[in-house]
Length: 191
Image (cartoon, rainbow, N blue to C red; front, side, top):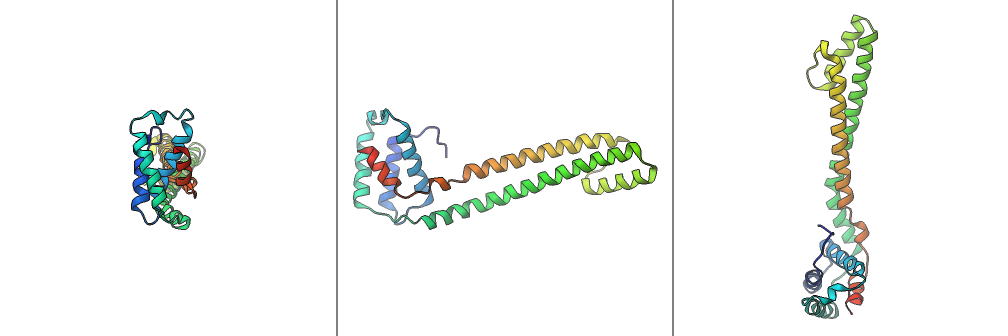
């Protein structure tokens, strides 16, 4: 969900519908209410009140909060969030492992390059054989220097994917939005 722009009257109506239609507040409804409250508080001039749809939406919300009382279960919200974050955490862990593995391969390619420059024929063969096994792609003996560069590129790509996975994890973690009394605070802002 994009938080950069929110249509406040529409969000108020959605939150009113959540209040009227839910027995227990869901994570989606909680996040929607938190973002609405955040938008209301961010607009210090209360320019949203000038919108022609605002009065009707505010009335709907106040009627809904006065007549309907869905249960707020913080533990259930946290469990719902945990179930959403579990696969994202697994992807981030997998990306972290791939990044570490690519970094290890690159470091080993540098060691093999050093062995190639300074050691005898048997040490060179043993090192290139092990690098071939670890790399998972074909290495030509006379082009060993190119594999230091290739493994460097693979390492950078793996680190970029890990950074993306971490950003996805941080974006999905809405635990700070799980707070009691959000709807009451919205009501205060609408009055």
